[in-house]
Length: 127
Image (cartoon, rainbow, N blue to C red):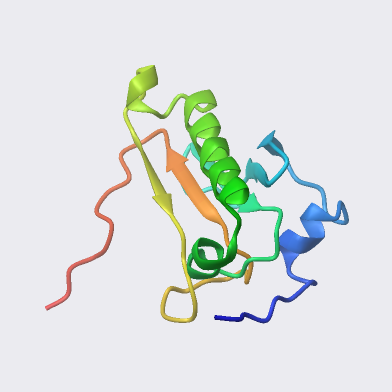
């Protein structure tokens, strides 16, 4: 499936160095930085350096090296932020949004890693 990528989205501009960010970690294929409007004491975004719009796009089209590097960077962020239960943390939430129903605000795949407090229910229940 082909996706049209917008080279002017804010994350593309961050990757080009046009917009500053508070980098937490980085590798050859991914960048992790603090969210500018954090929803938890620790709120880090992890983005691939490739031009992927959503989780669906990334999962279907990224190379094995890109996927592995992205996931390893997520694990590094979880460890360095002290969120992982393996490191004595109390856990975290990892969220990605896709498309209009998922309320995706930036058309570049990104994973929110949030923790440092009880996150509450994932979704509100409706009758």
